[in-house]
Image (cartoon, rainbow, N blue to C red; front, side, top):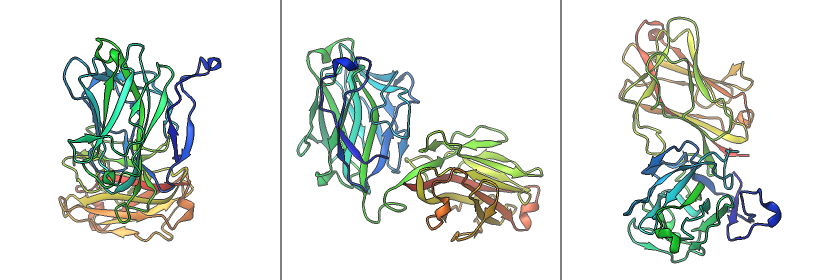
Length: 405
């Protein structure tokens, strides 16, 4: 993640750049301890929507974008979007379109900052030919009363698509925004065209970056959520390969398999667990690894390319007295050979569902786990129950966190 702010106050495009979709930006340094807390790239967005959750979130709080108000205005997807402010080498994909009449509605971004300070919000924006010409920015620290006090940039005149620009809203000096569960950003629309029956304003690659408060971050300051399985979208029946529900590393092959011999297999179960859930996810479903498990291993392929100080966490339990009573942990640096060298936790005895525990596997002291495209964690099963024909071990909310190199 680049530690930069880009001021979007350039309103002219060079005549020689008529094919460019973006306006040049000035680069300013962000606090080096900032992390990406929320990110909307909108690339999975389709059709008309009423609320949009982040595509990536480091926080467990409920962030969302809505468009409340009156009249016929609504929000939907448009494409192509913009690459300005995109992260993880994301393509321009889709963006979010706030349609006219927009003078009777507001685009509201719920952005809880619990556990963070020195907040900076950025996004790419433009308008259609008849879209509102002015965006006005205010914020709330109590969830209802809005102000622009202390905000250096509180208005912006969007250029006409395809000439997008980045808007940077710097809250880093507004202490009331820090560690605030009620923080919201409001965008109001003005100008003669805002009341029109057609036209829109366009947004893409919305980010909130901030510095973790001391003691509030689940792992080292600067860590990001690299891979996340919440398992809530698992298909019915036997599962062979389970890709991550979210990955920060572009083009990743993060996946879970159950390798070995015998009749054991993976499937889903419900309800899962809320332990270690991210983004306020519900307990939903979890992953069930069925006996006989003594002849199979859970293999979690989790490339760490570009990241260091890796920490994996997951919630786990067993089905009953017939579930395997021991989980053993090892890892591979080359994708083939497995070791447990220097791993602080190498074994765990799970409790019986619904008594879940969080297992933390800390690889931060293992330098070869850093920046490793072949990194795999192996979970093996033991105990007399593991050879049985019934019973299972259960997993939910598997996360990998690390710091960018």
